[in-house]
Image (tube, rainbow, N blue to C red):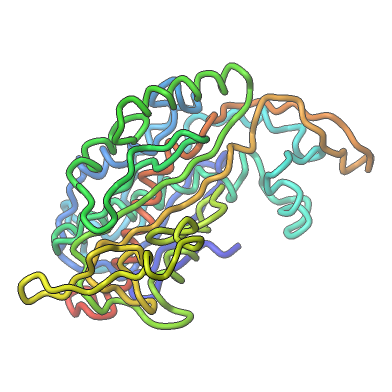
Length: 364
């Protein structure tokens, strides 16, 4: 199973949702960087399950145990290795799924690809549980980027059909976005947060789910980071984002809405801000030709409705080779997008740090 990414900063994840532990290895981090452990744990809590009634009630502390690469909270230059213990598995909830695959899950395709012994309890290595190690690595990457004047923050652009207040793509209020990041529903508009809360509680009662869109911003990036064609900023960001379970679409800047607009409205006109070249708008999302142009990087990530719902669904018995009904047990999020905000921040930070390592000698 492919579980690694990166060039100058490489990240590998391991483990399964109901195994003993999950974890990761990060190679290429600068030596001697002080990691704020309290800040990292606070970042991890944003993704951790069981924080409130809007989420799955699986409760995991998600506290990383560092095995190598960190001495007195300082990166030591060797690969950073860590694990997170799984302490709240209900594996019996998944016994019937070896024979009856869940609709829109990897149960069936994983079994065909890897054979009958593949561990798919709770989704196995395909589970969103594996995003916890991403948040450990990404939480550290966020701190390193901030020390270089680069800030990455995200919000829920949309949940179901409910849209947050629009953010100015050319001049995002990063302090406001950061302030709402710790909210259970990371929207800038408080009235929309209440609408989403009501929706999620109704879905929880109905045994159904919905999806959403996370929008992430990165400011402070220098001009000229990236590559053309097949190894650009968009390419690597999209590739890594699609490694997060439930991601169904990625766009940049004005995204798909801009595709139905006019060139005269979408083109980002150049202007001078003192000695600095800027654009008056930012429909290209801070990227042109796969390379940063100095404007805020803007990416939207579309997340499908949670596939594990409690409503009875049609499936098949693989042993009997006949249609059957399936009722899923276990503990699941009515909307996984709510906990995905920090994950998308983490993924974005790791990819940007990887690119920065190509030009920053301190990261080599």
